Length: 285
Image (cartoon, rainbow, N blue to C red; front, side, top):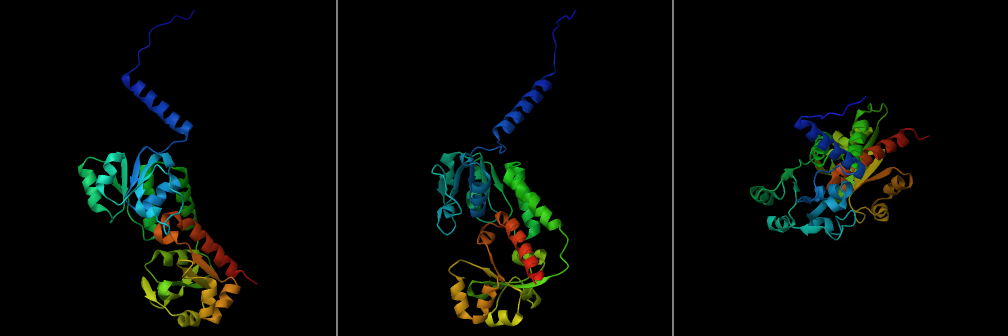
């Protein structure tokens, strides 16, 4: 016969039980962010929040994200736009303020002095730094599904062996700027299996290159980098007839503007597309 008796549990049992129930509730609700009132003082971090965090958890973004040239998606009406001034965020009482490595440092110091939780996310100018940036974002925002997806996808692409058959490429940006070694864009070309001819010509970081020089190098791929106005295909073709042959043969690729604004959101798609482009060029009949 079963006889009921009083059971006594240590206090830590109830603490663990509450923690488990809290985690279970988070999973059931699909909520993984530990913060419910997040503000940003950085354009790229604005975009990260808009793309990866539930809108209801964002209270403020920079005014730049509302500008037409930077707007990547609609901004919910409840989100206040700031100009990186501490007094703008105080009434909003954010429980997390994200700031970049260099900009808005005065506001960041002021908010820290007032006891707000301000976290600096390092900038990223290389593939290695992008991986570190993703980890820093995960450390503070938690295991967001799109963040983890981007992180795994980048790791998988970087783990692929270097292709045996390489193609050549040159980047042409506004005002005849090209990208050489030491730049993220150069790393993406090299990882995708392209030889960056500007770097081979000794260009370190940024340099200038004329259309005549581009054509004399005879790259397999001509990579455009800039706004649609800078690189309207009809405009380029009018500047030099050889460019029309590149356009007609599909031997062009346009790097997304997001790559310069917030590379962490664009690097995976860009690298995969460049890999596919190289494959189509070297395997073309």
